[in-house]
Image (cartoon, rainbow, N blue to C red; front, side, top):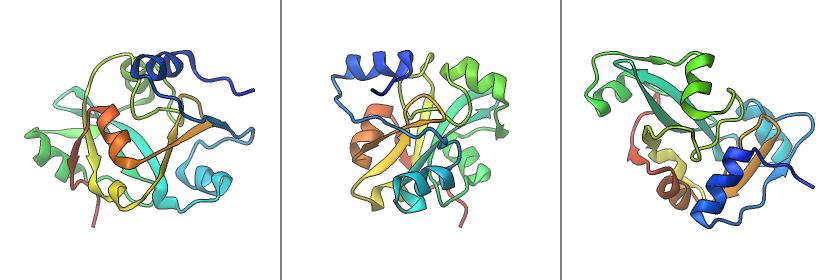
Amino acid sequence: MTTTHPLFAKALAELGLDVTVRTFPDGTRTAAEAAAAIGCELSQIVKSLIFAADGVPVLVLMDGASRVDVQAVRRELGAQKVARADAALVRETTGYAIGGVPPFGHRTRTRVLADRSLLAHDVVWAAAGTPHTVFPMRPAELITHAGATPADVRER
């Protein structure tokens, strides 16, 4: 039996989603660990990363094989300054710890950018609220449920 994080379980119920949450006892804290556990390409892992844009939290969904181009995020948002959020801001904003942040079902609503590279796959895998749980979803569906704006924000 898989235990799903209560906040994420609530979001799935509210969205009417029936997803298969998989648990990996050894953890899927990093994109590389998740890809190895699942047996998929690194780029099929969705990293849910919180940044502070002019002090306001923003979620960036990025494929596991790429890094976020902070300047591209800054331009996309029209912000003066963008920086990675610290662990406290991540938990305060999302309700989850780093390594388990899902793409939706957060404590607070934030602006969400999804890198277009995610759309290159039929299925992607994202954290399901803990560093040990993941779920699969079609990228376009994931972007819709996250309320994300597709953007080109990965380092070239």
